[in-house]
Image 1 (cartoon, rainbow, N blue to C red):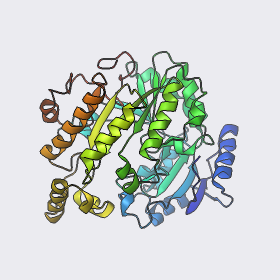
Image 2: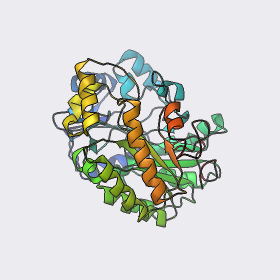
Image 3: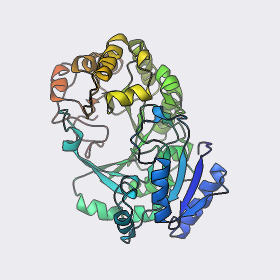
Length: 407
């Protein structure tokens, strides 16, 4: 796992409900050098949520120290007690992901609300909230909430599968980067072999990490896909603090591809720094010099209000049009929610450039747009062989080998 020093460490009094969870607790504490974790119950945990601001809607870049984190070692409870605690202590609601269940629904209608975005609904798996990277645009803030009872989660996945006869791809985990915590955490060792035995179900690991050696010998049987978020090196250095370099991510993907994993990439979010065109050209050339992805998804920086971007990022480092548009939105007091921060024309300029770069480097690699509008799909139709109703998506519920749009 990554070396990391936490500001405070807490263990819930239900965190280790079985021997496997107890062993995992020991490995995590040893790996992080923790010897003074404080045991807490639900009432004290709710007080901490309020006192430490764990539910505050803050972007990582707005924190005084973006690398500062608190750690809670926790566990899902499947006996109704978590929901009862949430009723008694409402502060626990969003902090515990609002449910006793280790999965949540990505609602396409909600994702596109107010912006006209196109998305694909799906159920997603979760076991950690919070990350050891410190990307300035990130919403996960100052807390790492780690669920330890992975075997209990795994054993309940058949319950989820029975409810979802048509979903084939399960994204894990978009609230964290689980590879940061491996192999001590053991999520890959728990879930990759399990999905390797599922003929029609696929796991997708979602990562920026280069910590992949533990994956290489696991019996994945082609049933695990790995999706890297990839950014140009200037973005890695100035925005994605604590995350591996561009070249390290590409090298990690190459290792995994050689070990038989299907790999895909998200250019997401594309941060429009002054040299974004040159930076993206270098990144695309470096990527296709080492890896043959089965899909690339592209996405422009968004998902925040103007004041959040001002507080989290150096807007003056953006290219002229993007910088000026951001400052105008801030000055106007714009509070619009939704996916898209920059105007259609600015986003189109970036997306047309990057799709063209990928097409030049690899004419047959499938490309999709993440959470974009139908108008954007129409304006890029000359470069994309499919549209908003039939595209393969990085984390779409049926975007697996053999599906439409994939080689």
